[in-house]
Image: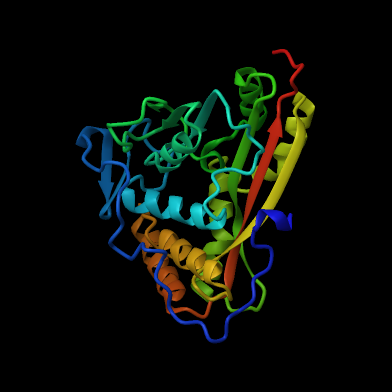
Length: 298
């Protein structure tokens, strides 16, 4: 889908030099949401803040450092588009699941002023002052690939809550990382091989989005569309946008927190290998959208 301007091919830039992470630098991340939150709602581990609500359901940090890096890399990946589904200009209601700081929500609400946007997240890190068409709610939901273990139920819930003619869109990372020229160093390679195994042990499938299209079709969705792009890990690929995506994604990966000392020691090695450069790794990112038929009933 060339018209979507997604990155389908990465070429090593042999003259590559370090690139600023799209305005986001290590240890200095501007916040859209608020980090001034009640201590009882969160736990601090290894210098990072995590959810305490329904403890352990979402294992990544929820502070602005992590959230802003994630939002920036998605922005760069989609060339500042917010979605790929062909939404009409007068979409009346929108739901964003796992909204983080709410940056995407605020941009969507500004571009679609006639749409009322409800956003759900585990953490109250969104702005307290919002436009009239935005509503933030705190609930037991998290980034789809990290937490869903009953995809048929999720698809059914989406179907039951969508109006006829409405659209659903998924945007998910596909683990593991790939490397086409054998430049992946040993500590990073070990982490890359064992991370999917570890998540599978707690019933989390990082590639589960690949099995969703048949579930959507079986439920009755139509006009399915999909696209895949690549995020380089670090600014090693040719192209200014590729370098920016790689720099921000590298920073995002390297600020993730871990709870076990033994694991953290290994992750330090992984982070050092990534920051040292020379690793031409990348990850695939999947976009999937579908429509509930106009003549559908619940």
